[in-house]
Length: 234
Image 1: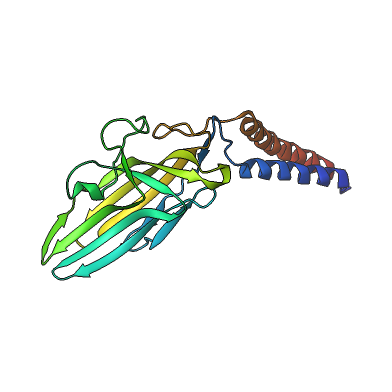
Image 2: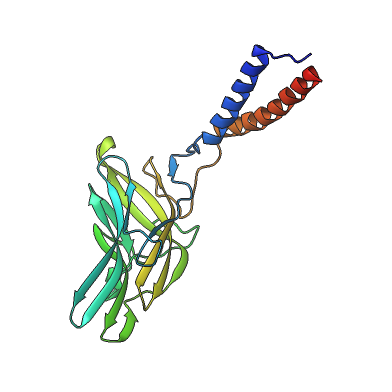
């Protein structure tokens, strides 16, 4: 005879909720690192690229990427600009004469936050720029790159304007047709005030490992529940 069990149904609901909760659990921060996860935000001029994106940092500080078209005969510029949107943000830039002062320094994974040359910062920075003079294309100081880290710092107004240090992982494609297209892959900062290493992300915490275990146990429990139910109705 076919039977239903409210107790079994409640167990299934609990298992599903536990599993769903584990899937939705955010990455816990270890050693003060706050990590965006993979976001792959696109800002630029090609199809599928947005006009702007803002990194919402704590308090009043925001770091904004936005595309800009600027034309003064005979020059035409297509560039993606990285700048302070609110509060206080500074971005690491190259040190040198024109035109390198326009551009953010690009670091490799594992680099120290302020290591090497190029440790001067600006509150507003043209980060990636294409330049067209009549029909001659030139890139001012940069060419395309993949998976490079841009160091930035900001004041956290929620903590007495304490300085925080972060990185933004980006790639850029430059073409004569559209100038610069930028992908912001991810970003992170350390909320303890430590100077974060390029590419550093949180280590899994106990809570995250427990959540992952709950997800596995939840799925296994659902399978056991279904097997028992099938036995009841057979």
